[in-house]
Image 1: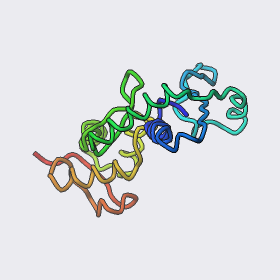
Image 2 (image 1 turned 180 degrees about the horizontal axis):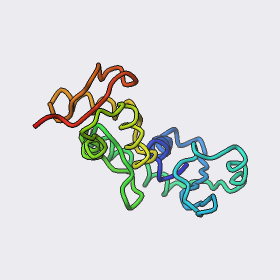
Image 3 (image 1 turned 120 degrees about the vertical axis):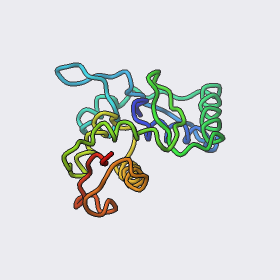
Length: 168
């Protein structure tokens, strides 16, 4: 798993709460790097099978104390009952409000009508492995309903909808 991916990090924390009679091993690729720019690994999902194979054999067992600490983090996040989880600048999984990505979405909406998938893709590229396209589409639908942005077409059908700034 990578602590740069909100989904992988959440899954990892969840797994630490599973029955204690099962040993748990982890391969943390967070500090790994790849490519000519030596960029950090954002998510295991972004690795090729050949790249993943270089990590085989580097797994480590989680001891009881570490597992308890991770399970407590997951319990805290669950008790916060927030609609989103994102990875902070400190590489910690934190709770976030439903409107967390709204500013980023609005920053990618221009005066000219832009295909909704292009707006969503721009935000996903900016916030790699933090959320899914369906979350961003839902937020755009809500922003349209609130009159913050305007839509040409039905925003529930992203591929045929164009988004633009709302007229003031």
